[in-house]
Image (cartoon, rainbow, N blue to C red; front, side, top):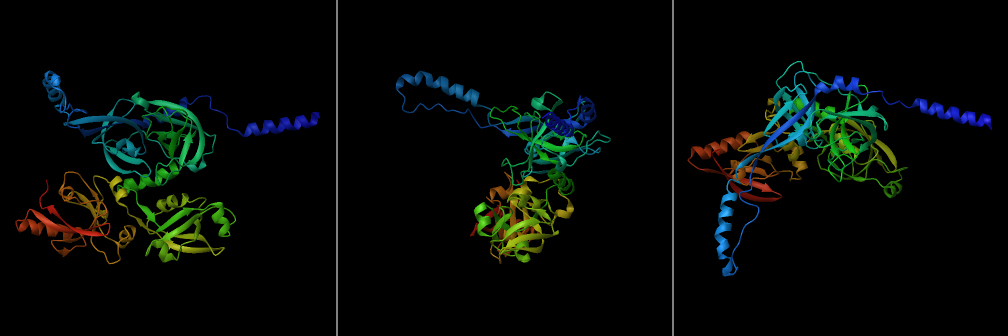
Length: 480
């Protein structure tokens, strides 16, 4: 009996010894890392509502109300004035320097509507920042300040994190200034329906309003996550915070730095979750992979021979454990990359090779736009009369589900108070003619408007197809 108890005690002691003990203090780590963590203050100009949020209406009231009518009308006139004027709205967030030459990471939602971005360091130095690029689908943004030799931090590998590992969050909650919290990794690969590529790290390190965009560090002082969201019924911390893993963030940030937007691979399939019942009916040993519902004609998947009813089990050597894994894997892969797909068909495994296209969506171009688009990308999209437009490529035609013989220029985004806005152009519109001449490029659009202007016309005529319906619209020949 004593020997048995001794064996149990030895086993218990051994298992405890494997666990990593809590550090005596986080102070040495924090002192090293804090100088690279910044506060980000943004200002947005918002147009007022144009009057009080209520109106006094005296119609139908008895004559006794007349003495009050003049008073309330003067009240409305006095306090309703100026409500339509532009007002500055400020907000706070966090970020961190990843390059000594001034590149700073934060969340997209921190800077997406900002007219002005100001970066504040802990030594109270302050810089105006410019937006390099942002990506709404991963909630990441890259900004830059004009500075040299800045303190900076480096990314670690979030794939090495284990549930229970210690992590440290540094940020600027509630605008109080630099603040530090510590906790553990509570879960991995969380899907909170924030976007199509959800793969969050969940942590109980305190993350509050204003921590958005700040770093999550491992015990080696490497950034393993970008703090992005919390779950809370009250708006405050209850120990459930979410960080974008570095494995997802790094490739996106590299693309933002190079192109000003995230470029994503495109396979061209519609997929469905594989249930136990579906797996059983298809002779699969367990429910995993992504079931192909539909294959876009002339897409990379179609060219590779992928068919409806196939189950994609592996993408480029990585297991597709569940349906939501596949879009993220494809999106993370470079355009034109040649990858292998392991698919389940007729109760057998088959391997096919596919060359990915580019996922070119109007939302992605709008959300990841950069003030200075690299010249090498001008052939992909350009600004025209207040709209972002692009030549209608074969891939765009497939993604917009247009007829194979449709040609023209597709509208990606329309800015308010511009000629394109006045023409009531909308995203996904395809301009097929200008001045009754077929157009296939931005240059031909410019030429058509120039010719109309030269002829003394205030408007140019455009023929547009929208959701299968064709109509004519007019666009002013002069910028407003």
